[in-house]
Amino acid sequence: MSKRRERYPFVMRDPTAGAASLAPLLPFRLRLGSLEESVLGLIDTGAAVNVLPWSVGERLGGDWDAAPPVTLTGNLAAVEARVLLCEALVGGFGPRRLAFAWSKSDVVPVLLGQINFLLVFDVLLSRSGQWFDVTDPGAIP
Image (cartoon, rainbow, N blue to C red; front, side):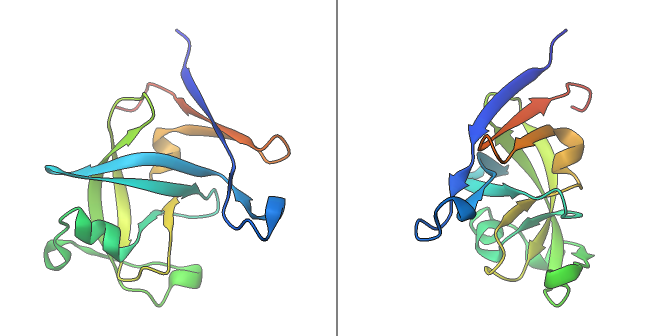
């Protein structure tokens, strides 16, 4: 059985910076209950966890007070965060449950990190080719 693979182009974040601003930004939808939001997620192999900005979680109807706290590290160590479980709809793949550290800040972008985006999907990056592939290994529902 072959694995399903989808290819995406790197996206220029700042036209004034040109190719230096190209990044692996994945368009996808997040769903929480009956609410859905289209987002661009930065695939960040150095991020320990997925991170969600405050306003996205709020538009999805997240309940900050009911969500368990989570501690962020690195540049985001001072930002308060809570766990938010969402359903992700990526390309033509079936829905997948993703756990996010929902930050109480809009300074952070949607980050797709080790826990758990990169556990659910395999990603192959080609910076010189300006593309990245997302593969559904099929082993994780």
